[in-house]
Image (tube, rainbow, N blue to C red; front, side, top):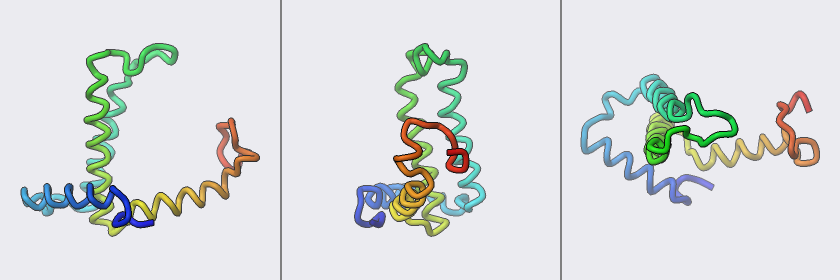
Length: 119
């Protein structure tokens, strides 16, 4: 499976066009995009800061709509990074799932939280 065969390919094309229209490519080095991805993930994480494990998450109801926005920002940064790194995300996810299935077979990993080398 490749991005061209999934809806992800269409989204990547939209993100690419958005960036090209604004001439933002000059700022999109892999290093800058990796940092931006971390920043956006941090902004997502901030919405859950100080939540109680058994309480509402996010803890403040007005933050709930922001979760979708921050998730979108994370995905956009990830797609930009994949674009500049030459990574087909669909193929990479498929390969990683296959690798993880070998490391975490259902018979040993189901319902467990240990890492593969601790099972």
